[in-house]
Image 1 (cartoon, one colour):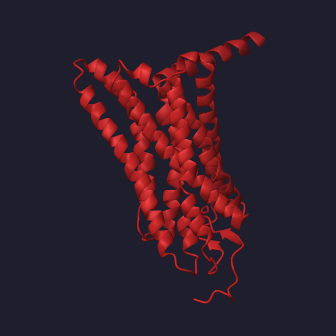
Image 2 (tube, helix red, strand yellow):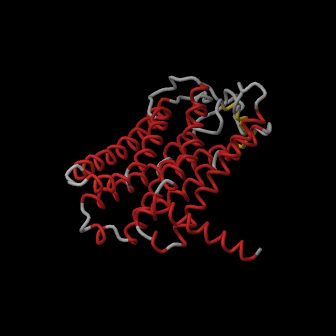
Length: 315
């Protein structure tokens, strides 16, 4: 195809939510509340863990790192969704690529971080005597650092291939933020390599991580079932239930969105799935993974009681 006379895209219009029928203000309010709740919940968790020595153990350090990641994961997309609802729909070509890169980098980092957290629970339950010497604070930070480095290297190939496409069909992105699939659909050059690379990389990352998590929990369940007392089994499972909930929410929505060889679903389907994994799942994480944790709840109640007493004394 001769591309010499084509006018190439330098700015995109993010279509956003085209079928909400004048409910922009209501959706803006919901997204704002979700974003504020996500930020405040995760900041609270980080503050509690950093300021209480009894929480300076690998389990809660991983929770704090996950909370820090969720703050940036939502910040990459939700503010742009909010401006889109205020009818500011344009984004530059470079800005669009950067949004894709950081969104997927943070998503891949979360994938590996959840895997590291499953490995931590495996060591704690299956090798309790060796756990303190194997999973030290230094080892915890090293594992987390590896997750971040690998996560930010993960989407480089896909972003580079995307940047080499001639996007000249339109500048309308049929999505709620910039992503690989809606931008690839705008190309007037061959996209077969992009589609194959996207599918292979996404499948590999999700399959390897999810397989490692399932194998870890298979060994955890086998070990816990050998515990004779009901109280002992309940205590062992209590540290795993919330993590598994987050894993299935995150991996389930991501699989339905990205592990497919071609665009087989509608743009509306993509928007719904994008809201689930970019807004709802991060909003739920502070509740189902951290604020429901007994130790964090105890520390939070103690902290609130202290603040209440101080305010009463001042008044």
